[in-house]
Image (cartoon, rainbow, N blue to C red; front, side, top):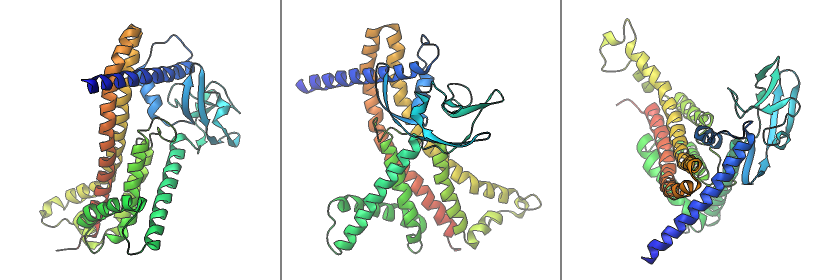
Length: 360
């Protein structure tokens, strides 16, 4: 009975904390709006949190917003190269050198300038939150793997120790459960560096996306441009690894009636489309699963505001139920973070195996 009481007290405490945090976040976004009396819009609240940003929000207290400014690097059609810190925008309200962050429309949340009375996007290569988060994860992974490699060299023939003992089962899992069965005993080794890289990169960034404070909180794997690049690497490696048997199966599929190949090359077209749809599915699956998880969590947080507008007490009451669902979703997201890294790596390995399979 005591344990139940403790659990309820913890849930109430977390609910109060989430309500206060979410209230600060709502105030932050309301501060951006021209119409301060506007009702809470859960759609904007959710999209603002899963989208990329030019600064890294740390916390808010009333009208004070602690953020880490990031470098804005743009090339304008009319004024050329510009580089400055995002703090020049003063939370989206000010212009700097003719540039500002659009608050609505097609380019909402992006740096724009006005040319001929129209909002125009400059060539934008800014160091955004997602870019910095990727760099942090890359540095972290390099440090781990270089440390593990040095440990193997230094302690050759000895039992793994420290971080080496943590990483070895994971590396062996990728090798024995993904690479070998999908690609084959003879050819898997040359694909291992790529498979290990995408597995740990996706898994680490999935986990970092669940952490609500810096250096976490960036929606890296929920950004379709990033998943597109990862899928593009898989597509390029698969295409250049394809042997004669692979291309014969695409353009002259064995066992298919000739009238499906000539005069209208129906089967070759279907097979060729499959070459492009496979990486497309890889891209969308990772993006959609990670984004959906974040959106569901934020939707539960939004319920606090929606009911809070009706009655403050109703908002606090809803916060307890919302937090319970948020905790459940976060536990589920921990599992999803690993599953999505595994699925992306497994499918990539399967495509490599299909490309290098010999004729039987």
